[in-house]
Amino acid sequence: MLQTNNYSLVLLIQLALLAYDLFVNSFSELLRAAPVVQLVLFIIQDIAILFNVIIILLMMFNTYVFQVGLVSLLLERFRALLLLSALYLTLSISFHCWIMNLRWLDSNRFVWTDGLQTLFVFQRLSAVLYYYFYKRTTEYLGDPRLYEDSAWLRDAFARARQ
Amino acid sequence: MHSQWAYSGHNSHLHGPCHHDDRVHCPPCQDEMPLAKTKKKKPKKESNDAEDAEEPGLEMEGMVSRRQSESRDPLTPEPQDVQPQKKKKKKKAQTPDGENAQADMANGGDGVEQQTDGEEVIRKPKKKKKPKTTERQYSNEVDIEDEDIITDTLPSIPQHSLFSAPQGHSQPVGKMFIEKNRRFHAADRLDVGKPINQIEDYLEMRSLWTTRDVALRVHSGFRVIGLFSHGFLAGYAVWNIIVVYVLAGEQLTTLSNLLNQYHTLAYPAQSLLYLLLAISTVSAFDRVNLAKASVALRGFLTMDPAALASFLYFAALILSLSQQMTSDRINLYVSANATLWPEGSEHRFLQPWIVVNLVVALLVGLAWVFVSTRPDLDYTEGERSSNTRTLVSRLMMNSTDNVIIRDQCILLQRMFPSKNFCKSKLIILC
Image (tube, rainbow over all chains, first blue to last red; front, side, top):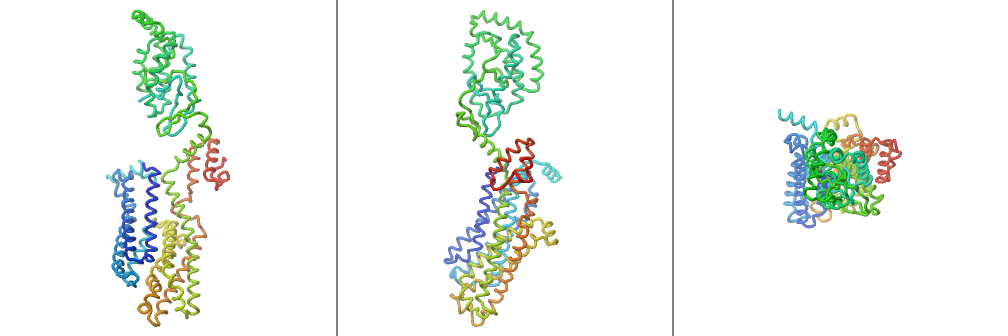
């Protein structure tokens, strides 16, 4: 059974990581006085995305639905978030590596190209979708019905066994 | 298994049915039990049937009203210490506890069986008179003094059965035992007064908070942040485009002036624009419940304000991100003037940038109008149920007593002073 205090703490951590991610996405271009500053920010951002994914997976593993064995049910319900998280992580790492490679020698240089601009747009767009689906999923995982036995779960289990 | 009455002594409180929470066990409730027992025991004293009839009956009471508490285990040795005192006080010797203890132990396992055993035991006392007299003869033969024989129908401490009800006389003491974290702590009666009821009530209210309530609270909190972001973004976008047009002059004839004045603001403005657009877009997606495709599509087809707003915000976000390159170019106007801004290129780079910023300002302004016409609309939360309403409705369902509902209404009012529950349509009985 998920305790309210534990859930509140986990929710707080997740929202803090999301807020940090949004902060870096918004203001990292202003903090490029030294290339190492942007490098550290990007590394922490990528680790934060990874931590968020791990936390959400742990929350899924903690549900009664998962413990019963209905993994496919959970994956089907949360596949949008899992796919978006993987996409966003890939785009972020790619963009960070590219732009750091371009700006390492001179951080105040104009480095934009059409390809970099396209990758930038996709990375920022996927970030917004990632925020929305992640917030929604983490709120949904607070439903006590996922952590207790119920008629619909037994029906789903019976259907899965067939 | 242990008896809830196991630690009852003549100087201790009898703790009634206990609950696994922080509550003060009500002494008056406990005192009722001994009175009930004495009433039953009086007519039976003469027939010396008290022990045989009472103990199964008391066991029945104990089984029916029992709720075990783990913290009572350490207190079980107390009854044995109190027994010698009672032996000295009581002069009348009744049957020893041995045989009755064995009978009670046999009967103590099953509450259902005890009901039938109680009836059978009631019939039995008449038959047992003879064995008691023979036992007295045996006791005299072994030189046991009369003072050592307990004849009182009220056994001091029930050492026979774990499930029997307490039979000792409890007397009120100055201290109350408060259960906290499965342990009992002594506290003076005077110190524990009205605030206990408030604490109990507060803890009851706190125990109603579930993870779903936390999630709903976070969702509603973000909705408030989103609402602020909608308005701030609209105002900021309008201000930004007005400044750009003022600096650019009529027909964009003074673009060099715009570059000179605005180049330090371009990149911070772009960053702030993205931050506000991200928050507003997520908030708009929340309102339209974008994850449920059926609901979102229906909203788009029916020109729902929330759906239109989310579409407008998403379009504005894409347009804003597309101008990142030009914004960085404006930002580097002073440092890389020759390479980035050759002669005659200002109009070529800046006109699309100004037009896109104008479109973004119009889009976010229009989206803000759509959102502000129905600020409470939220398809993700469902029927606009607030956290307080959830609490209230739960209380209403759990209680049918008007007095209890009214008390809970008062408690809610204390917790949420800004809201008037007595006039709320949800609470009719306040």
